[in-house]
Image (cartoon, rainbow, N blue to C red; front, side):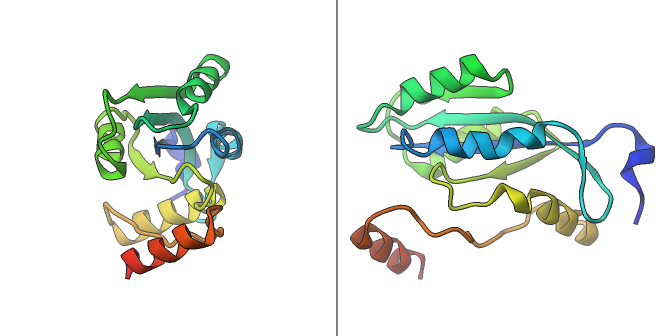
Length: 157
């Protein structure tokens, strides 16, 4: 393994978060990502850095737009992307990816199901395998009601 510390710039990571009804959880997700905006070493000694957090507003019935505006005003690294209407999670994710400028794109749910603590391990996996894509399974429990969680599990199967 090469030591990226000797190669200068870190691998820049764009984090894309599609936002639909994220008012309650969005602040916590951004707070978990903020420590990663400073360059850090992965377990395989690759130098990494989150260079932008892209919050894609996919309009919903809550006050997510206000939360996104507040986060963008408070943190220079937070970039909002505004969709004109609700297009769904996949379209919002693709809009965020198309707006990204990092070397790598990491997608996360707005509700905290994805643990930012695994960012380095996922990038190490991609670099070790010379892969352009890495999938991971959410590790945190979904914060939704029983019916929605059951429906989501069924859809994923």
